[in-house]
Image (cartoon, rainbow, N blue to C red; front, side):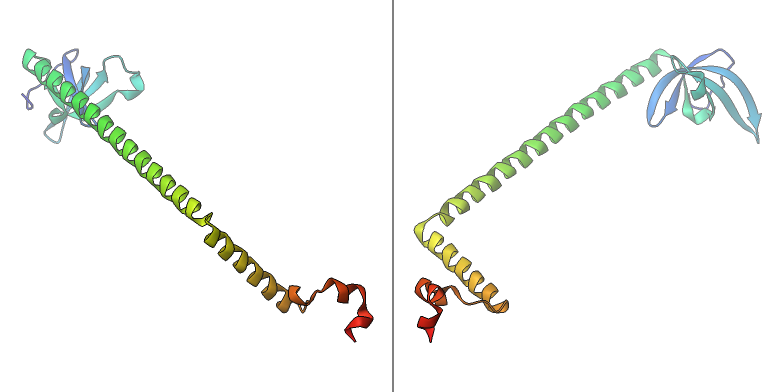
Length: 155
């Protein structure tokens, strides 16, 4: 069936990117002992017309139509399966995100315990003391309001 000769005006099926499409033979020629056919894809713009080799064509027979239908059904089933897999993958990602958020909420809640709050305050005070020391400022412990208002009391 693949090595068949085609004539101008004959209906056929042409392979394009792994799929079969109905087409019509417009012209034919033989080049270097090989048959080439200029085809028009049925329902497509003429800019898609092109030269193809015999191996890319099938005769328009009942057997070919059954084959085309089987391939179309298989591709449709594969597309559904791919969508289901993508949907499953998306649901899995959403579940992982929920678990990550739940874990974060748990960690955030744990940080709100009195011990954690005290630790946070202690760390903030250490950062403040370090900042003041680096910038040659008096430490918070030395800033006694009495001394600050009465400089003579310091002497």
